[in-house]
Image (cartoon, rainbow, N blue to C red; front, side, top):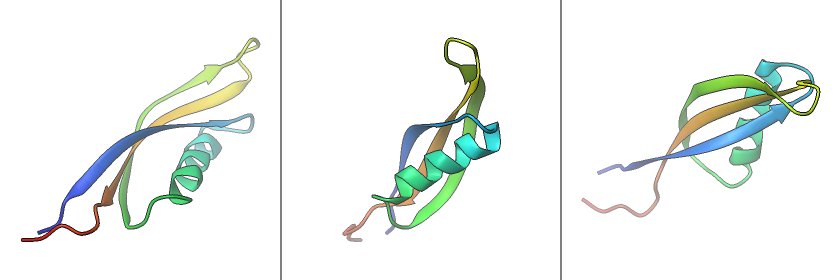
Length: 68
């Protein structure tokens, strides 16, 4: 039996919303294996001058060592 865990991660970028999403996935990917899906929950501008993109994403991945 496989079990999937879902976490929420925030990525940031001064370039674009796409870059913020990619940064969130890259950071999570440093510690996660078997990433199966990514859903963008919200995107917005942050910072004092609203010059930084933020992306809240849900990342799902398989959990190890799950028996039947």
